[in-house]
Each structure stands twice: as structure tokens, then as C-alpha cells.
Image (cartoon, rainbow, N blue to C red; front, side, top):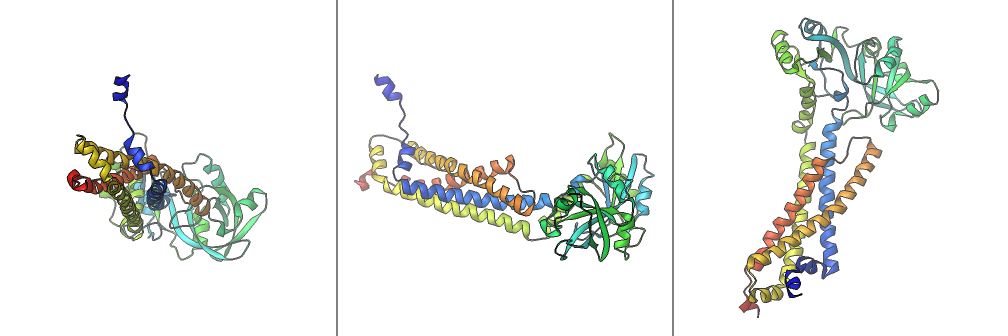
Length: 389
């Protein structure tokens, strides 16, 4: 019986934390708030980067040709279409698709207000998207003045998907010219574009007569199966003139992300917001643990006088920090999931919880609590049982 008693461990860390319920609640609220702030800031930042390449990921291509003067999807420059035809001379190239890319004014068919929309022009017979059902929808664009509307576009463009699914004829104006919606696609808004439409190059040039017929903004290149896309990209880069840049699809996606990361202040602002949440959490946890250690100095001194080593008592404070981190993380994670769902429903941006971010935020919270515990431990190390009594 005595042996069982000696093996029993008293949950001292939990007893010290739960002794004052209000203090524990304040600590958990502060940690959860810091966690929610980090979740939202990092979620917005990553969602921004992912949203900026919504269309880029859907292209049916191994390589992408763009102009060296293009800065991002919101500032695409044209290059000669013949460069894409020249790329067909490479032995590993099996197909190409010229694409026009620009922003046009869309008139809401319900309210008649106008809003900028991203328009892509392509040859209806060419592969464009990876969606297997897309080719059949694209055939409806062979007639001039026909467009495919992105049903995931923001509501400000009007109830186009709702009307179309009900069988209504949806007609409106794009760049001041009459068009008819003949189908729906699912692309999704990006940080640079709130909505998208697809049309034939013939209709696109009719909507933008200032665009030279021999100019395109994007050239999609498809390679034979098993081909090393990086090697073909390097080969084409060396053989084609300098008025075109050859990128793999992965490099094309990174090209867009790097613009938002390095050429704008948005990424820095969201990262700074997450850092501020981390600092706020550190201050709150430090104050809680420091106050807890200070209030229980006589008890700690008694244990030291009884022969407990200082490292054992420091372990008590460390376990308090771990308990606070775990208990504070759970509500932060749940609130983060709920807020992500709210953001997706309100903005249609791809803000979602992923395992990498969940682990990162938990690591930051644990680091925050352990760092604060290390600072609070100085009060315990400096304690002298003789002075306290």
C-alpha cells in the first residue's frame, strides 16, 4: 500500500493553474485570442497567395509562354503569337493553345452596374483547362458574342448562374458590346480578379479591338508524356527570341505568387499581424505564469527546504506552460475553422485550414508559452527559502 502511494504522482502543475479559475480563464482567453489572430493572419496570407493562382492551376499545359514585360496576372503584356508556333518545332511539343488575357467591364444584367472581370480568349477547339467536361462546353463559343461565365464569381456580377440554371437567356454587355452566356464553368475568384469569363479569341478581339490579332498574353504548351518539362523549357528559352519567356507550369504559379510576396506590402502586413499576435500571447502568458510563481513562492520554498531540487520545480512551471498551450490551442483551432468557413462564404476566396498551418500555429503557441515560462522561472531561481521565511 505504501509503495502504491509513493508511486502516485500529484498533478501539481494542474492544481496550481486551476486554483484560481478566473486567472486560468484569462490566460486561456489570451492564448486563444493570440492563436486566432495568428490563424487568421496566416490564413489570409496563404489564401491570398493561393487565390492569386486559381486559374493558373487549372490550365492544361506543361509549359507557359509569357512576355518578359508581364508583371503579374493584373498586368499581362502581349507577345507575338508566332513564338508559340515556333515552339511547335521542338520534338517534345505535342500541342499549343494561344490565350488572350485582360480585364474588361462587365455589366450586371440585374442592376446594370459595371465591374471589372477577367476575360480569357482562346480557340474553342484547343484544350485550355484540365476539366474533362470543358471541351464540350467550349464548342458553344464558336458563334461570335458567346461567353462562358464563372459561376464562382462574386455576387456583384449579378445572379447569372441562378438565371442560367433556370433556363433563362442571360444577355448583358462586356466592354460595351452585347454578349450571351451559353455555359457555366467553375474557376473561382482570385485576389486580382473577382470574376472570370471565357470566350473565343474572335469574340475577345471584337471586345478589345485595340489588341493586335497576332498578339497573345499567354501561350500554353503541352509536351509528350514522360518529357522533362524543365529541360524543354531551357531548350526553348535558348532557341526562341528574347521577347518571350518560357516557364514550367510550376514556375508560372511561383511567378504569380512572388509578385504578391515581393512587389506588394500585403504579404508583409499579414505576417506582421501574426507576429503581433505571437507577442501579445507572450505578454499575457508571462504575466500569468510570473504572477502564479510569485503567489506560490512560500509553497515552492517549502518544497525546496524539504529537499526538492530546483530542476524539479522548474519542471512544474514548464508543465504549466504546456497545459496552457494545449488548452489554449483547442478553442483557437475551432474558432479558426469557423472563421475560415465564414470568409469562404463571404469572399469565395480559398481560405482553409491545412495541416501545415495547424502544426505551425500550435508550435508558435507552444514556443510562446515555453518562452514565457523560461522568463517566469527566473523568479523561482532567485527565490531563497531563508529570505522567504
